[in-house]
Image: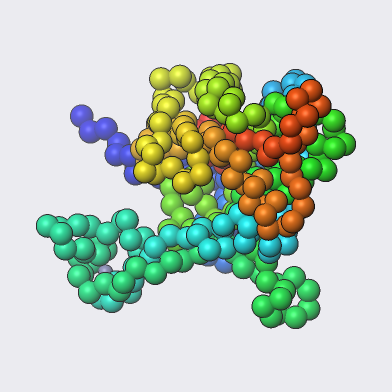
Length: 322
Ligand SMILES: [Zn+2]
């Protein structure tokens, strides 16, 4: 008896997705564009159903969440303040033998000697930071003053519109702002079909709360999101909750769960539920000079709210459903 290997199963899924009209390679007649995918007639329906269902349970059926739809291009200052311009990067190493560009954490370590996983070569460059954001120019001149990036996450639009939405919606804590939209990351090695692509869609909620309730809402959203996946038909025994260890968490996060799924290529993240503290709003308040504080009518206190973020990948969830 020979069971198909995981990569054979994955190949089958890719060809089935094409034949049935779910997912095609982007620009296929020109040889494709690595890390980009098009959804066909069935794929677009599945994807739209998923997004509509998320919007229904996360926004419409709740009275503590409102929605927004931010622009993909934003002022470069957003990405400076958020830390993405300086730190949103992977350390990369070039193999001088086969010319492959590799992520430093993907090298093979043989008795303390780093080797290229492609050719076994040991002639490697020092690691260099490679920023994952797509750079572009806004307007007619291509110079330093016109640089911005395609957003690498939808969350920052929510943080920078926090004050406007707080004022017009007259919300009291805790309350959330939700958004579904495209995000872009110039992944060095896009892989596993639509799982790690360069253009993808996110469904994100930023749930603002008091500092002392952050951990409580982190637990709450982890449970809500697990229920969501079960409700769309993903078997509970294929879902796993990983508590991200202190050393691997973003330095500003006080707690992060990854909700993982058993894909044919291994157990991988479907969604991250992160307690981001007051880091993002504080950064934008400092950089913009505009107050992003919340005023509590009852206690007359002014403070920057903390935030818990359940951030789901549309394309990954579609892949799990196929
Ligand atoms: Zn090599």
